[in-house]
Length: 132
Length: 275
Image (cartoon, rainbow over all chains, first blue to last red; front, side):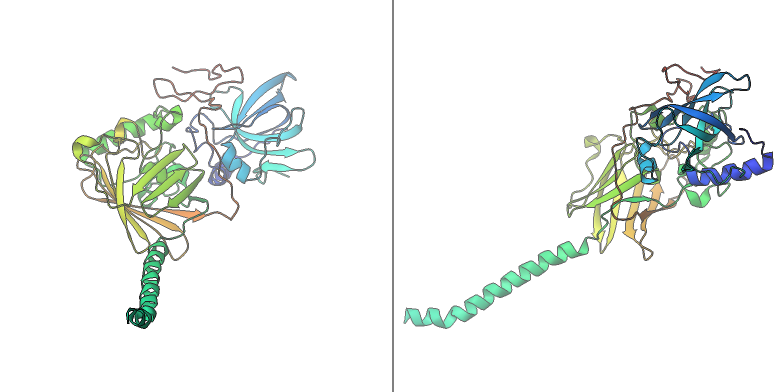
């Protein structure tokens, strides 16, 4: 599921999201991510790496050729995430989710985590920006 | 007769002892009383992605590491040139931020602008500032010692700090910081030289925020004292603080050219172009 947002709207949303999420301030710059592009896709959790300096959510996403691809979605560190309600089992292999992220500028299969919505409606991160 | 004298002086003797005990305990109590309670867990109040001097950051909502975002300390021409060189590296995603290597501390004064949380531990003879991120440990001696002699110190990440308590204000001086050799103040690439000297006043203000007022002098980097203010807010009771091992699962190594890579789950770079 993809949403095409206008460029201006993206800029405003990304600013608001970054104000909240402060991605990657802990360890490295976020220069490799396209902060003007927000992608939202259906995904299946392959693995959740609960570790510092960043969590990594390994997911399978079906591409436009109906082929399954693995993507690496990077979040911030686990200490702050824990204090925001995340837990080591927040994502379990096989979970079906909607995931939202800023993709890599170079087009490779990775991105900066923005938010996730589970089948039961649970949300982690930011989701208000997703069109209902 | 001897017994009579002893009996006569006994009440005075007891009274004197009581008075002595009272005076001693009062003195001790006053010593303890003047040390403020900064217990609990704190976090930085100012964000901006870690920009160090929010007051002079342009644009005001600019985040450290974003191209074009900078601050305006009173830099010498020589140091302004260096800063601009680093700003150009930021624009090309080539600023080598030392803490991205996962091996060295952020150092002082950058440790006042880190994400994650803080502890401020006070004892009469020493105060510790502990940052979860890094981690960093800053030691400020208040036991009356003076700064080490020149030939007994060398540049380190947090330098050498000595201070005193002025009522509930911790006033301290920090010297011997490693400066541009292996620290930056933030991801915009701002640095100081290893000749910097920082005077800091740290206290809890009326709003309950911890307020750090810094006056930085640096004969090489600055034309005049640079005043910087940072705040910290206290988090709710019960907030937990954890280990932070930067190298635990670092999938963003930095190349020799300063580019931050992204590793896939197999440990190989997934970036298309890197050097």
